[in-house]
Image (cartoon, rainbow, N blue to C red; front, side, top):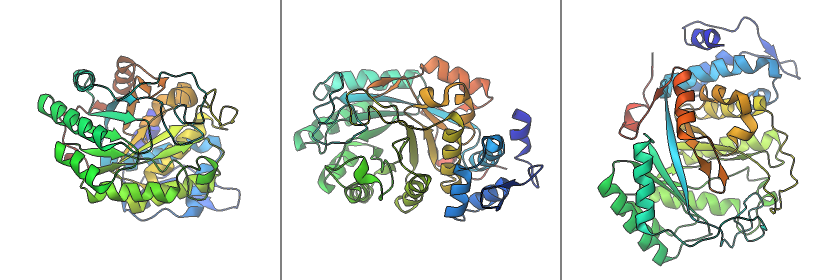
Length: 362
């Protein structure tokens, strides 16, 4: 495996054979890698062929995705710590979420953290060599009082640490977004979650257009954008492609890809995700081909759905969460860092400049 992936970086390398999809079209994954490196858009036909490729071709797909990842993001991987700083108490009806108003899941419910608790977690993230500390709030739109509390929280953390900060906070007004930016916030997370076509199947209390508008508001305020989605919610391969393709217009700096774990008590409790480790790897590779230079993060559900193939996700992706995902647990920091080092990758710490990573690697 390592030999194959290392060989893919050599100029002129091609797979030993061509792949053929169900429609008889020859698939040269290294040609797709060249296309992605040149930032030429991946076509729908190419994207669907990647997602539907036989599992025996996964290593060829990964080899191609790794060339793109190494070209733009090098051999570095960074970890991020995520804290749920306000839990439950949400008026939205997102079907996948255990914190939504339609969920009967048994979770902790609490109001917004005090500044001191967030500071402790930010310092802990710094101590574990996390590049970014992410804070998530349940709820559709924060109140102005919550924004004031969050701005004070951000200022305090920035004063005491050098770690980058991201907030997953729901819908913001331009004034609220600017207040957070002025306080020192680096980034806003707001996921598209699925395609525009499929969106009403996962949420009805707000629209897909509302999410896109919110991302544009955050961009207008000068905040970096983190936006990705969830696969395994009953969507089609076309929906997966459409979600990744729609993100091109939004231009996120970071794309987290989650894999649904149906939560008891939610409308999707009985959902069958129909995900295999190989399908997850194909989706991650497609995300890399469509977004060659972004931070691509393996997020919620990676431990559950990738299982023993988790290490292979680092070939298309260059970022992972550690410890957990809001209401579910995840891999420990020590386990994650050990995995990164075992693969021969370099741990990218919080002090690294992101601007130094977005250039081509020979």
